[in-house]
Image (tube, rainbow, N blue to C red; front, side, top):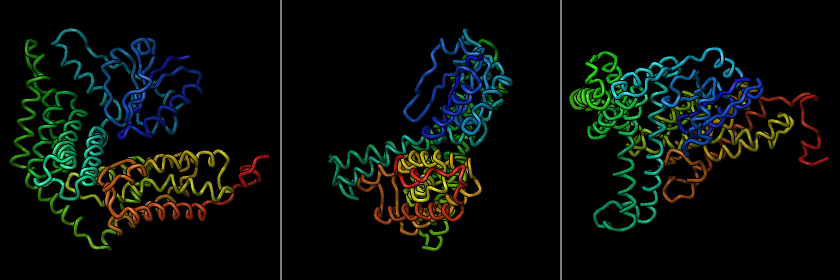
Length: 480
């Protein structure tokens, strides 16, 4: 019996984080091993690994889609994978970890060894699943709290002071104060945080300052979230390259991560943003913003269809996150219709499945009908991952069904001109004044997507055979 510790983390820190932890727990227990899993979710680290836990562990599993600090695990055997792998095959991940984990040596002690620590951490990521997508999702995960807080504060400002609350005539009022906290402050930090933590994911702490500086320049040059993404990647990879190729005497090695790398990288990315990248990307973003704001009904419908289908395609995977990141980034440019479409489309897969398990019980097993109750809660909370258990069991019927339903929800949301000022929250943000524009029709869009999903499941799925079908009493909802 092996003693294992693990960390799970996903970009939003909500569903995949805890589903991966559950997958690892079940997988380890099925193989007769002991495991403790630390979840680094949206509310911070839970079930935190202690020094004693780590010391006793034979192997460390990192199942994460964002950057995880490995400094605690110096000298331990580490195996890195994705949350998706842990969700779908926890036992397989545990087996692979025990067989393939390698020691990620991290030097400790003298200040001159700091360079070795940076190099070891980068090597650990390179041997795992790190890549551009993971770096982008790390930036998005750190950006989200600023978007949520800023969006809700702006909505509350409008609720207290009206749509012109930001004007000098309202200076000193509560609404004006809320707007100052939300727009010029919280929202202003979105792009620098995004860029900074993309760079941090690539190059560790030395990349943070040049990434955030590049993000600030993206904001000041008008290149917005597109410029911020470019600045983050440029700063991160520039810092990484300098760290690998800049050889200094040992007497200066301690200055490398805290002075030399941030200074040179900031200079490089700053000059590029000012003289090369800022203006062209700003023009591209302005063109995109103008097109989105001037869309006619037909083009809005098509964009909603595409975003909606993307949200349901892989339920929290790269395609889903691409649509979500696109919509979230546009909030900084005050383009809020795609965000509304994306949230509606992300809510309908689990909601449609929950409704189908309630209405068409003969098409679902007892276990699936029980899972439908949890899917309903996840759906109203805008956690698309609630559809994963159903899709994993019957992908060729479930995935097309939820894609059609989500496409309908996204298209109707865009067609109705519904807007959403915050990037998360599900039904819990709907009652907040001015958080959602055209609220009645937005609810219609969500309900329509849910009904279409359930109808598609009725058409594509067939009643279970006698051995699999729930009992008559269960179907009628009565007890024996």
